[in-house]
Amino acid sequence: MGIHKALRIIFTEADRSYRWVKKPNDAFGGSSALEVMLGGELTDVMRVRRYLDAVRGG
Image 1: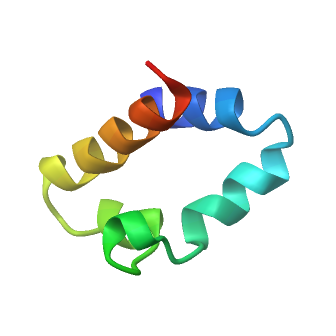
Image 2: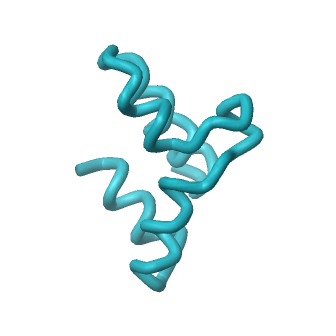
């Protein structure tokens, strides 16, 4: 839920947040946030959450 909330704060248009999750990202070594979160470890999801918190200033 924290990832979803952060995305809604960063992107006012829901469609943009859905695209961002699937888009390659330099912060994740060229992988998308979705690819990182599907890595199989809880820390993968936490990595995306920390990144979004930093971007939104949280």
